[in-house]
Image (cartoon, one colour):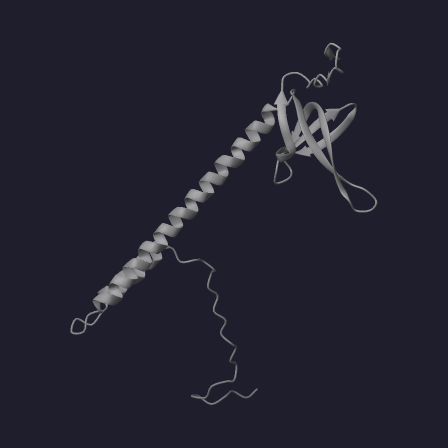
Amino acid sequence: METPPVGTLEATHEPFERKVPRKLLGKDDFMSLMLTQIRHQDPLEPMDNTESIAQLAQFSSLEQMQNVATGVDNVLTAINSGNKAAALGMIGKYVEGFVLTEDESGNTAQENVTGKVRGVDFTTETPTIVVDTDGRQLRIPQHQIQGVGEKPAEPEEEVVEPVEGEEKLEN
């Protein structure tokens, strides 16, 4: 077995692969970078005031955008919680709503339905209300519910207009 002479390099170069975790820089990282830059600046040629003001403005904008994003997340969480609570509050009550159906031709039709809520399904993005209507179990998205009540909706009384000379009749 031959050994290479001392002072020679073997050709065992493997490409360097830098593994950096994917992380977004936040306001703390930005502030740390700016402070490091200020600490290590040349005292004879300090950083330009315009440049440092621009960096501070960027820092302020970043912080405001993060605060807005947090606020929007909080609002969406509150809305979703409210929707879920409202959906659960419908159980055992009577609802009026509509379902969309499609015929063989591909035309969409709206069918108005009423019935008693038997449950709520949260497996979809929008809560789905399970309604028992005349023995059929329908699954209606919460945004398609138009009314909620303790009793079933009663059909409106039909008023027949009298012909001249006759009295008004109610059915």
